[in-house]
Image (cartoon, rainbow, N blue to C red; front, top):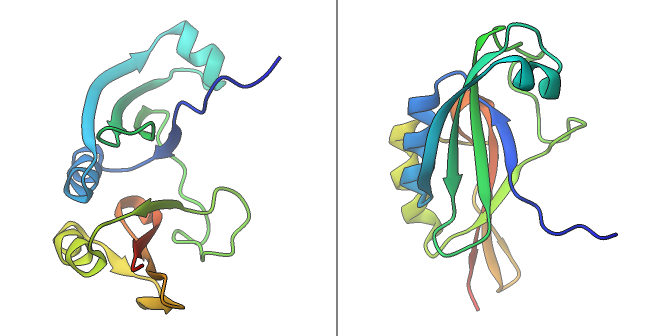
Amino acid sequence: MTIQRMDNVGIVVDDLDATVAFFTELGMELEGRSLIEGSWAEQVVGLGGLRSEVAMMRVPDGPGRLELVTYHSPKAVTPEPAFTPPNTLGLHRVMFAVDDLEDTLARLRPHGAELIGEVSRFEDRYLMCYLRGPSGIILALAEQLS
């Protein structure tokens, strides 16, 4: 038996509309939104009284998808510290290849994007950076130079 594919990466967010707008500005497309609740969802997730909303975002013409989830019940839990550093154990970041890194940053800043470090050049091959988006999500962006 083998894996067939990776379907998506799930990210819990506090403001679904703002996060959808952020990833739309990045260039992803909203595939759909739906309310998730009921005993089947409670059994899968392991939370009683589950009521959440999911927005599925996809990379145009690509296989990558993000499942953005906001919990209405039970409320989402905030980790300590609220914004963990890049070396925190667990899911680290989501990386996107972009055509123009500076333009992408300029478009994402009005949606709350903040650089964690700075834009850096890796040899003559890439411009790269880490940034923090809605709900503290860490993204890496890379622009291929050669």
